[in-house]
Picture: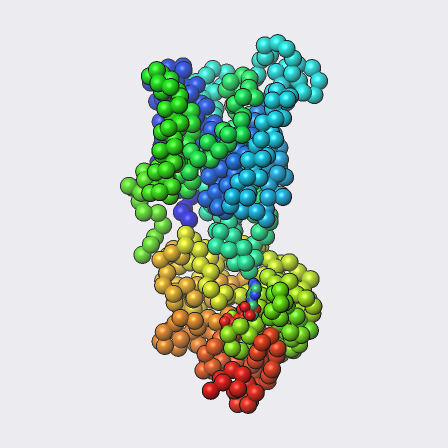
Amino acid sequence: MGRIFSYATLTGLGLLILALIALPLMLGALWIKVLTSAAIFALAAAGVALVYAQLGLINLAQIALIGVGGWIALRLNYATDLPVTLLVLIAGTLTGVIGAIFALPALRMRGLYLALVTLMVAALFQIFFNAFQFPNGGEGFWGVAQKSASEVRRPGFAESDVGYYRYTLIFMAIGFGVIGLHKITAPGRAWAMIRQSEANAMATGVNVTLYKLWAFALSGLLAGTAGALLAGALGQLDARSFLAGEGILLFALAVVGGVFSWVGAIVAGLLYKLLPALFNDLGLSADVAMIIFGAALMHAIMTAPQGIAGQILGAFNRGGSDD
Amino acid sequence: MIEIADVTVKFGGVVALDNVTLEIADDVVGLIGPNGAGKTTLVNAFSGFVRQAGGRISVHGTSLSDLAPHERARWGLARSFQKVQIVPDLSVADHLLAMLDSKGLSRAQCKEAVHHALDFVGIQNISSKMGRSLNPYQRRMTEIAKCLVGAPRLILLDEPGGGLSQAEMQHLRRVIRGIHPEYGAQILLVDHDVDLIRDVCASTAVLDFGKLIAFGNTNAVLEDEVVKTAYLGR
Ligand SMILES: Nc1ncnc2c1ncn2[C@@H]1O[C@H](COP(=O)(O)OP(=O)(O)OP(=O)(O)O)[C@@H](O)[C@H]1O
Ligand SMILES: [Mg+2]
């Protein structure tokens, strides 16, 4: 457990300012859009990483929950005049609740069984999204019409792509901050006790069920927020982006990036969105990215349990006082 | 005052606790018995970790059996584990803070309680050390210190002396003897080390094959012929 203003946090804030100011000056519109998406998926990856790092539980349904958040945000976008930031927060909160509800029956499971259950949940949502599509401004509850999508609002101060990129980065940073705060306060200690053993946690006065649900809810909150931000970034969501298999990929990339730090989540977001875009730019097939992901995953599993982030951070500090 | 009434615990065909009934008024009480006698199972019954086939446990008039395991801890039941429970990536102080998180104390009160407990067991100097880099002695002491914070009412120590050197045992004895005067909690001490039991426990209970075979003044119990054959056995 570190202090609130550790080196890592200060470095992160420095990088954030750099990314907010310098990158838009250096990069063209296309790459800003790609980075916006990368930041959105980094936020969601941080949720998967949290649940895995803190409790050792595998969640393969995160992409599905991004879809849920996106669906709620689009639905509210067309049905109400609420400010966009409020929409994002509502979508995040509701998705957090939904994430916790789906985690409820899974609480007694772990390892492969839990992973399979989350995969089933993801498949369920895949079917749901395919059947009902995402609201695009049509009539009725499902809000889908055979027409090009009506406008998805962005906040007044973030109408432009660069503005929205900054808006997204701020959300991502706040999300990382919320996770970081959890880790160094009571929930972080409670999760640590559960990690050691549930008996140990109970003997410490930890309500195991509550804190497990809380981890899933927090992860869902991040996914829902990401989904709402994605809706604003793309202006429209496509059911084909939320296949169950994508959830496996996001989890794998979170592991490759490193689940113990926000750096890993950023690496995951970049791998998920930036790498394929780079390959596309170079005229390479997107399949090359998949091959690289596979190799990176093998690397992470065999030699780098802390992921790429662990290797980056390891060069700077050894984490905690070991002496 | 601990009241154990007709407690039975079965694991399949094994009767780990067989109708154990016991009332304990002494401040520090020992629990001994050969391997597999059911000592840890009794401690787990206090914690609510095993399903009781029957019976009740109450402490100071509170029926523990009616509380969920984590509620028992919040009520003031503290315990250490035979297999010591230390989280590798959590500091010593954080182990103690975790215990206090559910007790609604202010930051300053928590800090003070942690400081006091670490000081009491003599490991104040390693409060920021990570669990993974503690030696066996420091692990034991961290677990005992964890039992002391947050106003415990009953402390269960399951073989705290396991794997310690002679010098460390000396220190452990002093610590255990000091707990009741300092913190006021009642203590149930499970250990194989008869010297330790004789040294700190006013009364002692003996389990054998899940049955209570003796209870009373420690010296008298240790001289008891039945106990000698069952336990000391030589
Ligand atoms: N979770 C369990 N499942 C099945 N059997 C168990 C379980 N826990 C304990 N037992 C059995 O119950 C009996 C009592 O075990 P217990 O651990 O309480 O003994 P103990 O007195 O603590 O022994 P030791 O001195 O070796 O720690 C043993 O026969 C043990 O094998
Ligand atoms: Mg035992």
